[in-house]
Length: 243
Image (cartoon, rainbow, N blue to C red; front, side):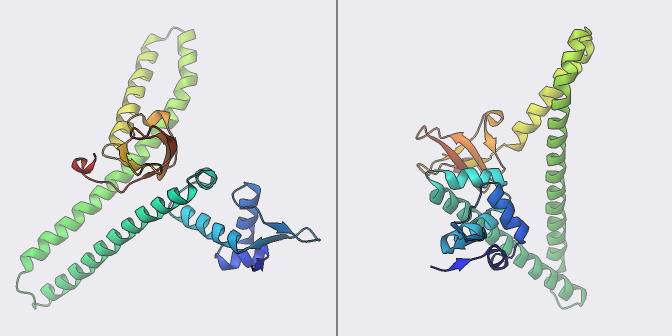
């Protein structure tokens, strides 16, 4: 089995030496041994784990989530599901890019007068712009959700003050903001389903405020097998596919 220094690990995984050291400090990836001089020594298994960590980090998982997932009894199953879902996402993105490339080619031919049906290209362009607008709306929704969380935290302290001051109108404003935050959260999780690594069941998480995790994995109880674990976000599907 090969042995690697911190620098060699960093080079093989295209990260900085400081990143490898940071993962050690955070308990995400410890070296398998140390030299007589106190230098970190890694092996092939450590290299595989670092590559997994880098992959999970690149698809949006936080270090805390990665650490928890890798410590889970079903870590291999959870990682497999995560990577399968990422492969589906990448395949869809590649297909969409290919369609856009073909669309651009058709539009160029239309401008040059070579295409026989330029009207279809106009409809395609409109469809592309509509999808772009939908993407922008999604980002705006995410910003709104973050703002609601921040306001709620400040509101807790504010609520204590206004109760002591008997400012009931301010309390009414706070409650209205809380209702708005819950509504936004419910809308954000609409038609969002997760995969249980224990029984492969696909289910919705209805009590979002009582679960932890990132937007890729959540610690939740499966309604089918009744076990708790890190459940993986499934690529969004129409409600009719949810059993």
